[in-house]
Image (tube, rainbow, N blue to C red; front, side):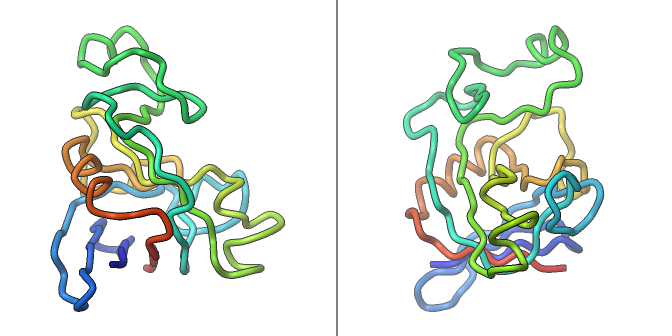
Length: 159
């Protein structure tokens, strides 16, 4: 299996072992576009792998801070009481870069930038670049993807 994220189309595709696309999801990537530098708030390009899978068994909408569940569950009312938060919900697929100097090591290290595939609030649009660099997905979609892909799955991000 492998995953491709198309920044231009704001789309994530999952390919099976036979190379056929088996799932397609609308996503939201970095509002500032593509880029690898730490602090840029851009989505890093290139070849990555899923380094860690976080949140197995958590309820849909479970709130994570620092990759740990807070015990809270997102709702529109909860979000209204906490304006401005960058919601990381339901599941986290933490990425690490595979290309030294491009998305691994130094000021361009995807893992040290805490770049994830993760769920977000239902009030956030998909198909529009609005994230702080991560790849945001609908909660139902990230939960489904999480169940389908093992750690080590290749994730290619391109423009």
